[in-house]
Amino acid sequence: MKKLVLFAWLLAPVAAVAYHYGPGQDRLRDDEASAAAQHAQALATEAREIAAADGDAAARSLWAQAEQAYAEALAALPNGRVAEARMLRLEHAKAQMFVSQLPDARRTLAGLVEELSADASADPKLLDEARDALANAQYYTTWLMRLEGAAREEWEPEIEASRQNYKLVAERASDAEQRELAAQNVESSIRLARMDLKDLQGLPLPSQ
Image 1 (cartoon, helix red, strand yellow):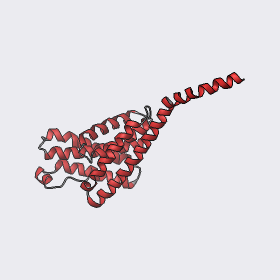
Image 2 (tube, one colour; image 1 turned 90 degrees about the vertical axis):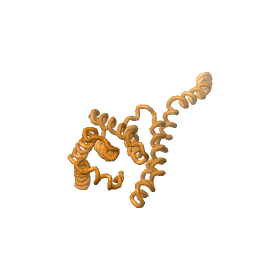
Image 3 (cartoon, one colour; image 1 turned 120 degrees about the vertical axis):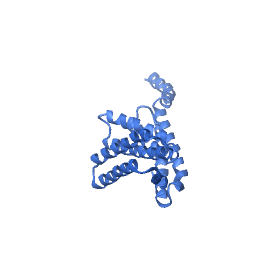
Image 4 (cartoon, one colour; image 1 turned 60 degrees about the vertical axis):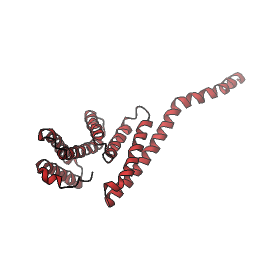
């Protein structure tokens, strides 16, 4: 019995080391990812409040901090945390759109929508949110393409994709307010496609 107790006592440091470099590392990374995500969410919330009061430019520095924090949360997240990674990718892409990273955000959102659409177990609300964010990215991409003088055959597929995504969001909306907002976005995408370039050049870039 004494030998058994001594053997267990000798193994205790080994077990501690094994935990530290095994499951313990995942726990540490999980805590780090959670802290970064909470910090990013707080920054994004503050950025939205400032943007609503003073415009997007006033909130840009906060969006930059939020984008960095979301990136840190994604980097720290342990492997296999698929649902959490998808949510963080979505929020990170939203932040990117406010800090001149629209092309990167659009690529991320397009991949995320495709991934979620192919996964029957995926959260449908997350898919709707990702699709709405993708439609926004496509809308702003079209606006910029038109201002840069792109030919209709270049920007028209982009705004049509935006319209279709807004339409899907409207059809799947769970309440009247969401449906109304999505319907307004559909109309906005149609107006953007039909608007004369001279009229578009006289307008400020809309808030994202």
